[in-house]
Image (cartoon, helix red, strand yellow):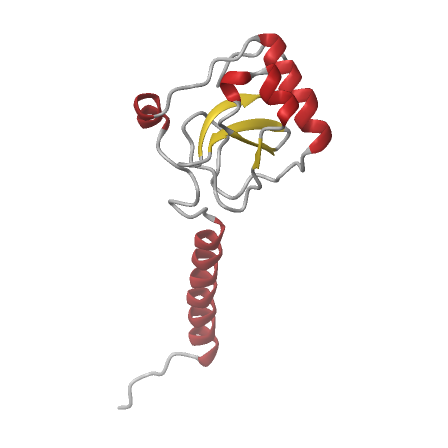
Length: 143
């Protein structure tokens, strides 16, 4: 007696199911952000390595109003969160503090400045670490 052969239709269904399962797994993996994409140190690490720049509400307001009118608003790179201590990816444009702002906020004059997702960031130019985050609300605390 000859062994019974499985119908070709059943084989094709199993083959299609396997290919579909692999495709779903590949799409799910492609959507996950890279593990180390510009995230910088973990927030718990940043507290010990980066000291936040203290700004008064008037200083925060002056910085926010000046920078939002003159600087490009960058989209946040994948995996980057705007927090004090975070490493700023090279794709985010940073500029020196203007002379006017340096006179108004002298203790911030050594830092670079940029804007990500409508949040102004002051950054240590040597390490590209965020030292202050300024949002639209002038009374918001340093993040």
